[in-house]
Length: 490
Ligand code: ZN
Ligand code: CU
Image (cartoon, rainbow, N blue to C red; front, top):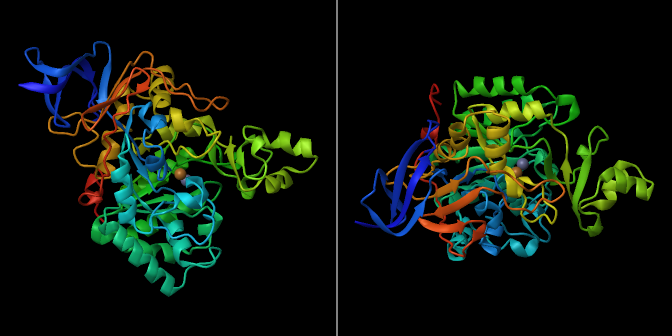
């Protein structure tokens, strides 16, 4: 038997949260065909993996890569981390289905300018991804704010019955065309006015498809518990799983509450399929939000349309230079992007280590001075938090970015190194893997990622993308409720 690829003598950490074992892995026709001692086997391409870990390719469950997968399909920021699948459409913002009347409303502008939004239907978006053939697989959520922008003339109010009917229709069509579910970003001004009832009515569409509800909570600050409660009520009403996006305790007044927040998550999980994602940093990033301007912690401006040269500078420094208040400086900079150093390290660690949390980068690929999570989130978990800090064993770190994520989002035959599974794989050196991107130089590729295969094709090797792009569009398959652990039923 001649295989396409043989990876010899790797330490296989298979994504199931169990310790690794040594084996050879044979790939053929895009899939893992055999795992074991294959000393007699031969392949077109053979690779000695002694001293290296072979894991399932990482699944970035929280991205804003919607338009970049089409416009820059090499996807180097993700491929270089060992990511082989991205889930787009988070935080209520998605590239599809969207018909803009003018500029994209905040924070849809995180996905690009008006020209980037050319997918009136979800099917159009899916076709565009398929023809762009990005280097990573793509699965997509539909954003609530995107639906609102299609049907509401004023985003600062809740939707009327007719508008809800129109949004439901578009959501249903998108789910039929393979969307994973609905995302909201209720903290943002352009969705904040939506009542719980508006979201509940939209979420009613999810049940028939076994689709998921993901949410950037209405508040990540002091009212975080009420916001979580709202998310769980929506999920229970819709009989749909709930994923809390980038779970955190934001703002100095909220520090130290992660134990409470995680208890709330556990309590909900006992009776309903719920989970969360998080990124491994104590700083957040999004558009510049006047409500988040504070002198309690530093804020860095990453981009500004009226003042582009301020990208990378501290808001306090800009305010001092202009002799104005922080708030006035922020107002003058808008529209803009920012990094907020608004979390406590202990909270970040506690959430990262919790068994219900998955890893998602929340990276912002359009940002000219992006938060380093765009290039560093996954290697930072493996290097800094797993190896250096000892927050969890390596097989648990890998599980949080592979097997757990594939189960939650119903990504069939992915997320595990197993015979018959798709050969989405990453080979890395557990002694040297680390994130290099930081807040000063955020666009730097990780170290220690030796090889990345997407659907059986070696696409990244020794620090270089080789131009082979094999990513696919992954349509929702089956009922996502089945991918949650034991709970008492919806
Ligand atoms: Zn978000
Ligand atoms: Cu996000």
